[in-house]
Amino acid sequence: MSMGIVVTCDRSVPYGICAARLYTGARTEAEAYEVAARAGWSTAGAGSDRCPAHTLPRPRRSGPPCGNNPRARATSADWQVVTDFLTYLKNRKETPTP
Image (cartoon, rainbow, N blue to C red; front, side, top):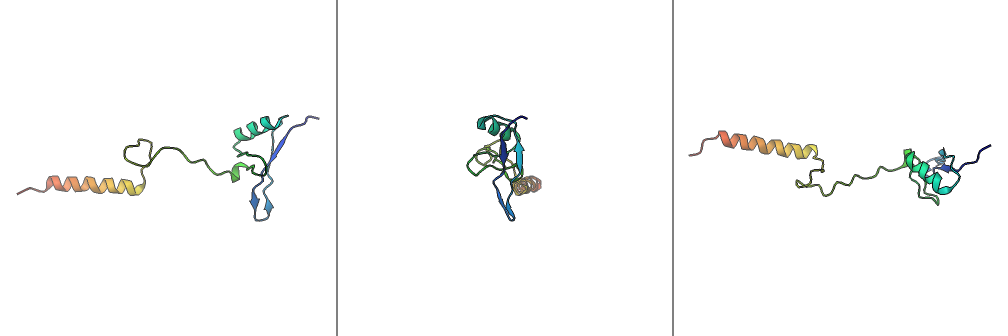
């Protein structure tokens, strides 16, 4: 029989605790948490281990949401402003000036 550490989800749910289990097969706690992290678990120990279903997604660090940041994602409202401005420029170009 082989021994290994099991990580259990400590997330409270309406009917108690999630208690999902991950059989890591690790012999040390450090190895177990490494295996759990690779499996998508959030492991902080001491009653705060979370299974993938209860792990909050990590926010993507892309910097400030401004026009100078190429990694910032434009929302549909942003694209609407761009479209409106391009329409304005087109109409301005076609309007004769006195």
